[in-house]
Image 1 (cartoon, helix red, strand yellow):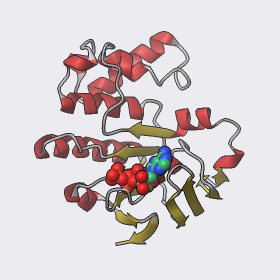
Image 2 (cartoon, rainbow, N blue to C red; image 1 turned 45 degrees about the vertical axis):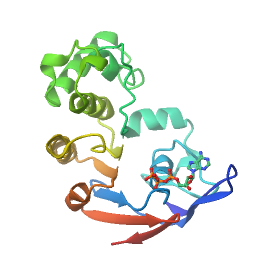
Image 3 (cartoon, rainbow, N blue to C red; image 1 turned 60 degrees about the horizontal axis):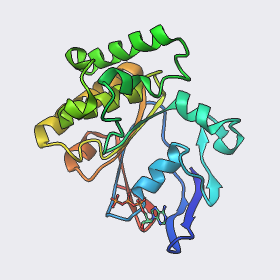
Image 4 (cartoon, rainbow, N blue to C red; image 1 turned 120 degrees about the vertical axis):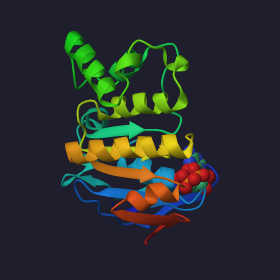
Length: 215
Ligand SMILES: Nc1ncnc2c1ncn2[C@@H]1O[C@H](COP(=O)(O)OP(=O)(O)OP(=O)(O)O)[C@@H](O)[C@H]1O
């Protein structure tokens, strides 16, 4: 991120103020800071879900503004994990994983086989045909992780991935994310309020009032 500013006209808020941040390939970065400090806004910018008011986000040496399609960019390069999972409750675990795979796995049978492989990878091989609303909270987060790593994106972005979990489940989810990022050499950026999650990171970035500080 080079000189990234984000101004929300609604409420006249400067959510990011001249943010400069370089994240290396395969690095694990934790973003921490007080509520309203700009953490989610920063994550949304990294994932091309929102555009800066000023400045530029670069990915693999190219500014996002030069990407021909941000949808395709996101589908191939970014895996998103949200606190509230964003699963469709009436669909099975497998169907939820397949949802975002149309671009990376155009063939139906390939898509199904890959979704099953990914669910086995996150320890849910016996829950493939369970509806999402019949899964435990920890299992739902695992489905969200399986979906995020489909297509092996180089960058995984997670917003409070342990926020809804107790300590033990939270640790299991972080162990899983850690294993995956090391196996796949993925870059991992996690927004967290949880000190134990931040302690695992290679680097902790603190953001307050839209401004960065490295701690
Ligand atoms: N879509 C929006 N429109 C207007 N203001 C917004 C919008 N999204 C966020 N903001 C404001 O921008 C600031 C940063 O919000 P952001 O969600 O990035 O903070 P955060 O650090 O992730 O907070 P939390 O830890 O509470 O989730 C806040 O003051 C928030 O009210």
